[in-house]
Length: 161
Image 1 (cartoon, helix red, strand yellow):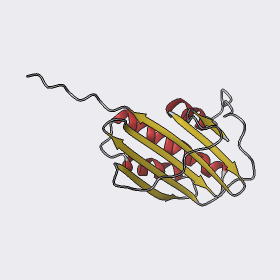
Image 2 (spheres, one colour):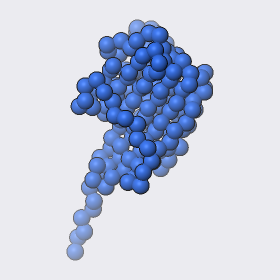
Image 3 (cartoon, helix red, strand yellow):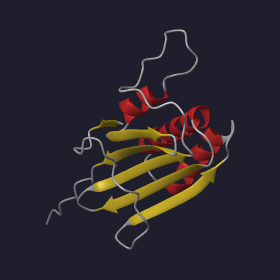
Image 4 (cartoon, one colour):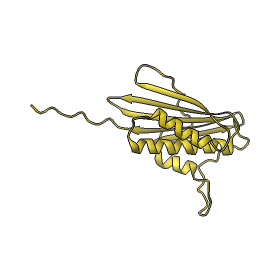
């Protein structure tokens, strides 16, 4: 299991479901093929419609990388879940999870750095650089890659009377 910044070594938070407390969830199947990344980017854009451009760009890239890894290393089915939680106090929190049907090779202890001339191998390095927290758990029955992006709430404008 790989994890960074969650405060819970060896575990990732359970998936959330839609509620009335400012949380919206989008869940979609991804095609098992080259289009997985494209479909993930589009779904993340739908889930984050109206969000600031920097957060949207980071989230779309992360969704694309997680979907690419699931297709390249895992088995079907591929499923994307995007949870968007808004709070006046805590700001905006986005969780992106991609699961697959598992893979025969277990995850390394840390994300390997890509070879300098390599055309691939940077997915988890990118996720690590952009996400506030992330984890990867892999076994033969299923793989779960999860990350969290946070943006703090803007301070409310003070009235001047």
